[in-house]
Image (cartoon, rainbow, N blue to C red; front, side, top):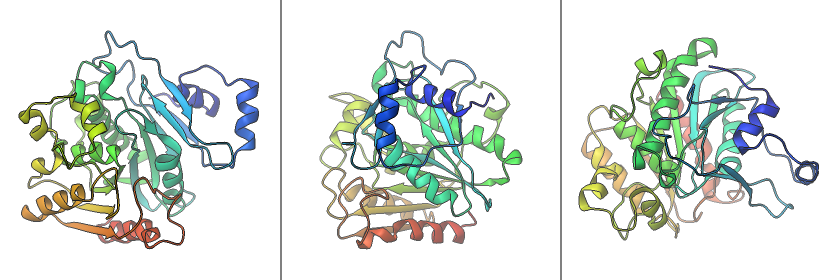
Length: 325
């Protein structure tokens, strides 16, 4: 699979061929955020089901220029994996899946920053820019899962050349990205796309799943309404709600799961993580749940300083090591 240099990588991520002089000057004034060393395309050609898709990929800068960059990608056309290499590899890898309500993908706050934190601790990290279900892809609500399955398989195929083991690959999803991670955790065997190359002969099963303030259920009143609407439409059937509620898909081969949520989360109710934890325990799947009294939603690494929720990254690292990741 081809490798892109930094300029080409940003162009691919942004969906444009160059940055204007003005935007480069604006970026230079903002506090630095980690940038990937490489960005690699997820699919060798167009993604599955791309016929008729007309949405234009766009990068939105959401910061006010005073704080760190906060880029979100809408209408993803070319899914990618952004690579963060550790100085001292520990033999394990993490695929990060940022959130965004299935309407956008929040790359800096929940992707690049956390990836760099993990890379500093030895993990080879990949941030997934995935397609969104409302853009007319042939697979509809399964388009993001196609990208997640492909990402796990491709990363597994790269393991021999990147100093991590094929059986030491974790995924970490945030908010709606947590729903996608939970879907991969429970539906890694689902046949959602046709084989593309040798990478697709490998398993899409994660060795560990970390779900950070995740959307889990599609049940009205408990789900995140915006994510449900983007994924399933305004009035989904009972069957669709059940099929895309991750807590209903837990089975005997579900990998160990680490969950983090804040009790005062007003966007994605903590009941999402509670339901997933209960489903995991009912199937005797190893799981660890941390519920913090305060933290709200979307805290990532930016909004945790001085709060008990600041413990979550270290708690994940401890659990991952316990599970051999």
